[in-house]
Amino acid sequence: MLSILLIGVGLSMDAFAVSVTSGLTVKGFGPKQACLLGAYFGGFQCLMPLLGYLLGSTVSGLVSEYAPYISFFLLAFVGVKMLVEAIKGGDKAVCTRLRHSQLLAMAVATSLDALAVGISFAFMPGVSLLPSCLLIGCTTFVLCFLGGMVGGKIPGVSCKTSGILGGLVLCGIGIKLLIEGLV
Image 1 (cartoon, rainbow, N blue to C red):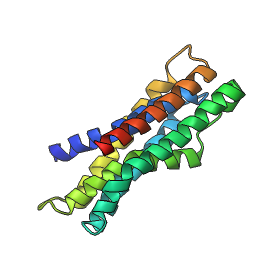
Image 2: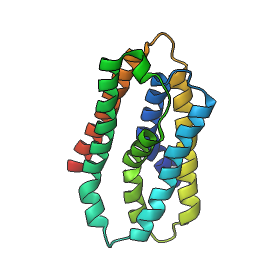
Image 3: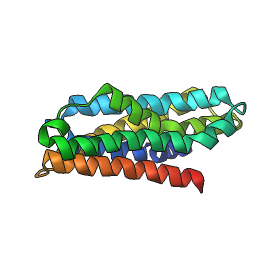
Image 4: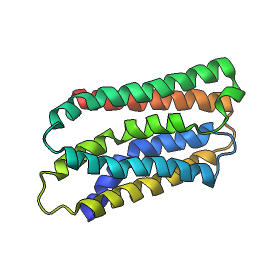
């Protein structure tokens, strides 16, 4: 189970970075919002390996081929939207609240690598699928909760600045995932 825990930590790093950014960009960020982040990211990190396991080898080439593009598009879309809102709208447009549509897009984008891990689970003998997926999901929940809380506690960052920073971070993570997938 130690190896599954380490896989969970590795899979959750992108979601952790997005959580810190969300903590920075949402005015009045607190435990409720951190739980929401953890639930979205942890839930998807738990479900995607299950889905990947079920898909097995039938569509593994398709998933592997398009996952970097999908992740890039989703994160870049949300990041560019955040940048535009920060630049045009200033403080009021950026520091509002977490939107479920944004959380859904970010959770899907950051969990596509977990889908690939699930596909690899289908070919690994002796993997306890449900406990492994639950451990990955719980690990991600905890790290995203903590990341959001840390981001929410960073003082002295204006909403406009944090919106620009957040948009750049999301675009950067999308580019990183695209490059990793292409190499």
